[in-house]
Length: 93
Image 1: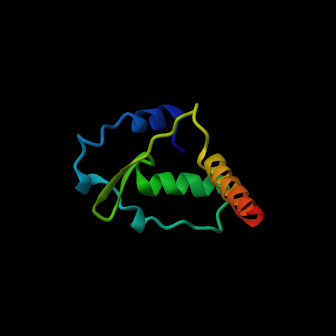
Image 2 (image 1 turned 90 degrees about the vertical axis):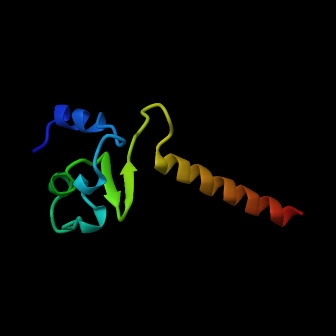
């Protein structure tokens, strides 16, 4: 199993200093949905090598998460509420 220290080191890799050919293509990663959640996560990390830096085809993908900003889920909920409010307001016109 990967350690938190190893994950922290993975976060620090500069995408501009890595050879894209050395990155794993996420299209080659296979998720076994039969595994329990923790094992799926471990298997994903084992396959992708670095969950913060990989490629999708010819595109290098560098992931970064801010602990202070809203999560993607929160942003999607906010967006859906905004659309719902806009829809309700159009009905009043």
